[in-house]
Image (cartoon, rainbow, N blue to C red; front, side):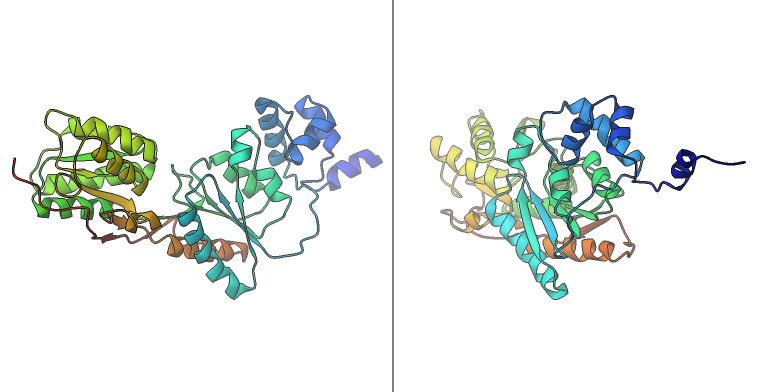
Length: 346
């Protein structure tokens, strides 16, 4: 049987060589629309964008990229507190520097706020690997990076992104240590501020707090629980709700240090003194924790170590190695300062 030239070309075409015009025809859009998706530009509806991206992935498309001029790692943030981001970058740089690998960073707040994609523009820089330290990382983002052959490691993701490797801390044991410290001081009526229910770290910290109370034989009082987000404003507002109860708590465990700083303001507004009238414990140990008066007792997360671990993992993946596990957890430590004391007799 004699094959014509078109048949031969179809049979010899490699995955990823499908023309943009063909992708456009399959997606029911124009070639310029496919080009916009490839280059991360706006002006494309979300459903259309997803349809085009799916076709590109299905056909193993590899977009033509500039010649690689560096072996760089990209660290992606989204409105992360500066002191935490700097520590993560410091850890990444410490590892990357030993491999003659440059490090860049991107804050995708503008793209996310405008509903624009951020993965595609990142891929145009052809990074050796990506470290994502942002709560909005989704399975679709992971798939896009995987389809382009770019290894990814997530730092403290909100949900389970298996098989994407993740680096975090033992939030459960950190919360246990915080609660036990307050229990050992004599507190029994302890309030809790936590983060979004969908957040894995929030759930782990709340579970650890419950476990510490359960081990001490103290029932958990649901009326002393408030869910919010990890911000100063929620710490202030939710803290004020608890502190103005007819029977307020004598201590508060906060989901992070920003919430704890907000509780300091709530205590000021309600005429309470820390730690004389109220004990407060945070989580993270950001720089500002040591600057408060009194300095904040908090659970320290080793952000530099997390960044270094993520860098080692993503470079191993870039070298074609397999990882031995899906999630890597660092230890936390309770840093005792001046914001907690035994409860006053009432």
